[in-house]
Length: 116
Image 1: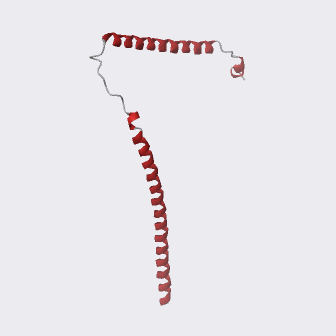
Image 2: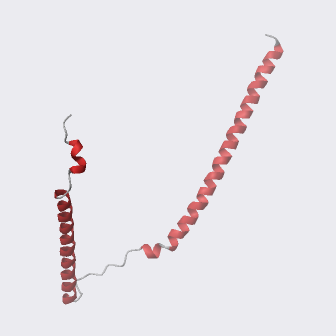
Image 3: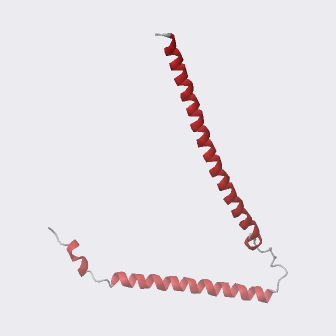
């Protein structure tokens, strides 16, 4: 092999290496710019959440020990009535669904029961 072929080989390798470095640098730069945009969007969302933090907080806890017994009794009775009403409405819905199943017209599905 002549001496100049080594210069061509090494020159090509160095140019390929520099091209690869440029490619990775551009790729990394684009990713950093995209990450910067996402950080900006995240900062805006965090700002909105921090403004709404007071609305999202739970109300302070108040012990029922010192409350009026008649008011607590009325609240408990109302809660029981609400649960009873919800239970009855679920039961009525189940009965309606059951009646629809029992009284369903099977003729549209008669082809499924025919033997071939």
